[in-house]
Image (cartoon, rainbow, N blue to C red; front, side):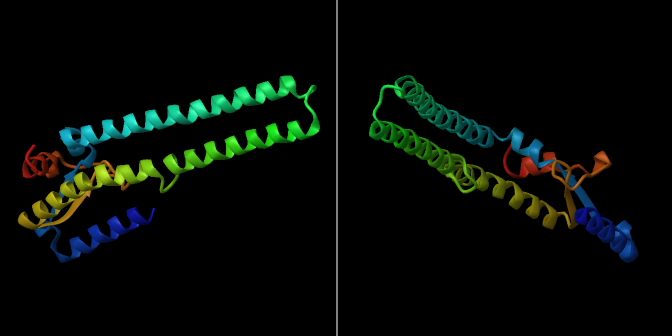
Length: 170
C-alpha cells in the first residue's frame, strides 16, 4: 500500500514539474533473468542442492520412524532403563534431524547462503545495467512490472527489458 501511495505521489509530483519532460521506463526483471543462461544454471544448481539435502533429511526421518516402530514393538519386553535409553536415542536423533533441517533450509541456512552466492551477483548485474540504462537515457523512473509494485498498465513503448538484455550481452 505504501508503494502505491509513493508511486502516486511521485507521478503527481512529476506532473507538476513537467511530466512531458520526464522519461519513464518499464522492465520485467523476471523476463530478463529468465533469458540469462547463468541465472538458469544457478537456479538448477540450487534446485539440485535442495533436492539432495531434502532426501538426506527424509532418510534421517525414515531411520527415526524405524527406531520408533522397533521401540514400540519391543517396549513391553524391555526393562525400564532400556526404555529410557531408547527413548532418549529417538529424541536425540529427532533433534539432530531438525537441527540439520534448520541448518540447510532455515532463514539464514546453507540454501539461503548459496542462493546469495549464486543469484545475487546476477541480480546485481541486471540492476547495474538498469541503472546505467536509466542514467544514459535520462530516465527519471524505471518500474519493474514483475515485482510487488503492481503496474496495472504500461504502454509497450515504455518497455526497456530487451534494451537491458542487450546492455548485459544477451
